[in-house]
Image 1 (spheres, rainbow, N blue to C red):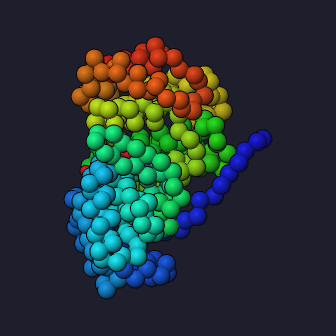
Image 2 (cartoon, rainbow, N blue to C red):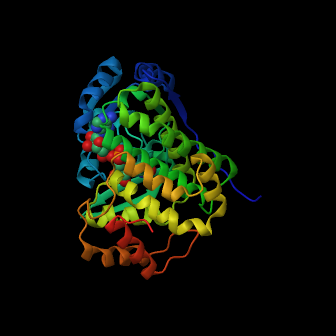
Length: 350
Ligand code: NAD
């Protein structure tokens, strides 16, 4: 065995109804002047947060957008400065938490994250900012939230379709964490357990989006998968999804759902330990086929064509992916990437 593991410093509060514990969490952390940020669709929840924080809430910015446009980030930084905020509470999916991280990156304000999807950004020190159509990302320990309040009740408003694809987005972190060059035993345990929890919970969530027990299990899985994302270096799957989202604007969670079985099938022969862990977690002999069938049975999109990608963009994306190096257990030529993309575009798992 040969590994390096760095535990990330963070508090996690997890419970149905945990939102009610947020004021106490903020008080424990000693924050006095909190700026609340969220996306337009989380404004009602953010207003609840704002009211619950009483005198400690100094502002509410409901402007988070996908991929954190630089102009939105600049507005948030200016508002935090103007209000003399000493901290930020980010309520919502990866976009809202991304906006909180943009403030943290610029001003060093600590962030408390209240996630409402399964995307996992709350567990990572990774920031993203988009300017002139180009998304830049980087790691900075100061954007890692100091505390994460997971409340499964906040996820019941996700429709079944988003719940499923957001769940697959989380499973993708686990899959790539298992074969990451910087995998470690504890992170691999989190990955296998996170993926297991999600594949078990998602059918129940899709059948009844208000099933709070299934919602708790899914969010628990998402937490673990997010922790894996924060601890390891992602491979070909994330590289492809980043290129498809960044270059063509394809939707984040849906793209992850379509691409994941193809990349796992491609990598599996070169990642025997990861394949064994996933086989055990899913109780199958073919984890890629298992994920493919699960997504299909839950009504998720099955092809990049369905997501609006033009066939003629396959070569462009293959070029973007091969233009810079990335970690992956199986080296992939440009031709192999184009073949994989063609299969994902058609929606045919070989
Ligand atoms: P998102 O935050 O944009 O949310 C997707 C949609 O779902 C939005 O319209 C949002 O308003 C809505 N939504 C969110 N929570 C909801 C709820 N509970 N009920 C109903 N609707 C809800 O997308 P996401 O998938 O959560 O995150 C994707 C973004 O996060 C991408 O920009 C991605 O790059 C980024 N991300 C970053 C990291 C990181 O470590 N930095 C990790 C994962 C994702």
